[in-house]
Length: 393
Ligand SMILES: Cc1cc2nc3c(=O)[nH]c(=O)nc-3n(C[C@H](O)[C@H](O)[C@H](O)COP(=O)(O)O)c2cc1C
Ligand SMILES: [Fe+2]
Ligand SMILES: [Fe+2]
Image (cartoon, rainbow, N blue to C red; front, side, top):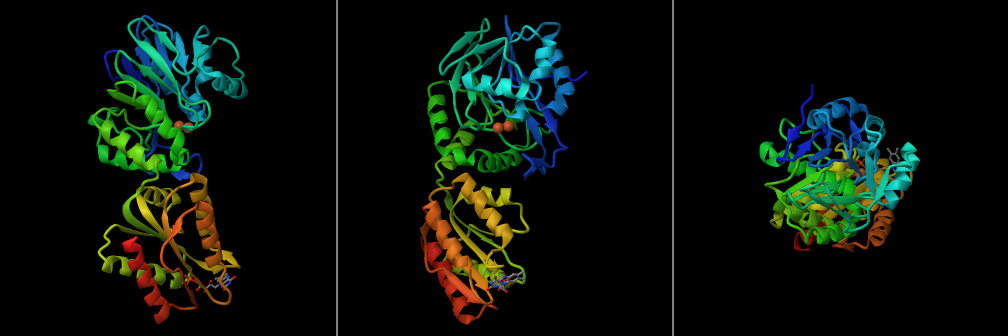
């Protein structure tokens, strides 16, 4: 019953929308859902590229059968083994026992480990090609976007590249599949959030992959999540390039924790100082209120970061401690940084933030501000001065 969607004459979309999952990887909220994308190239031979997460196998296979019209899948190309894409491999193999599974040496180790599949394999290396008839496919090994086995598949005839998680976006596909047929701004925001949270750590592998992609002409980027990119290709390549270099546009993110509002007042004063100096791009976040994935997205987008926390049981406020771990986990580079803290009897947060800056190799701007009990005039002025320093940085 379910229908596939054509992208070009020979390339079809057979992916599915997941609007039920609350948290991607059980940690990142999905206010707009997510899609698991899979593609079919129909030629003398038929190639299927990646699959979908197992709960969606029924709808997925229905769409696939719509494309096949009685034919079989000759090749199943596995660009990425993470279970959101590899989940239906066993179902495909059961349906088409003669299918040749294409992957690299690392793919096949994972394939055996996850699904016990060890036969019918066709191993490719970087630059290998196969012909489907009219369509010649070339494989680019792109390790660590976002696992060691990840690769990309390029179709020279339709100039389409199947990129796995690279160039992916959160957001289920509302009607269309190609960017030109969607309300694209929502997906561009979710593209940034996806990159920051999922691929963010792998800046240098992403740079290497971009270099490899330079060698071919690309009319369609077909990732495993979110829209197929056609009109927005220059923009998303530019965004990926900039995010993976950790460049950061001009802007300041202030992230604080506060139980009774004292630390919060310091955040406000720093923002005042920034604003008085003409800075407009200021984002203030309460770490306990806004989900970390959104704050991380802005930290990736902007060049300056200020963090503040009350001392809590001789350490950071727990949500702030966990947030530092999330930043560290993504290895965000080159931020200009400052910090502030509030306590009542002995401050612990200042040395923790100072050590964190050192660990991240971030440049510390201005004089960090510390206050005890409520915010008083000296510290208030110091916060405004810090804001002014940050505006100049
Ligand atoms: C549960 C709890 C634990 C705290 N632990 C410490 C501490 O170990 N050392 C300290 O100097 N202050 C401690 N404080 C005091 C706060 O750090 C201080 O009141 C701070 O100004 C609170 O900032 P806020 O108003 O932004 O929440 C603690 C407060 C609470 C509620
Ligand atoms: Fe992945
Ligand atoms: Fe994925």
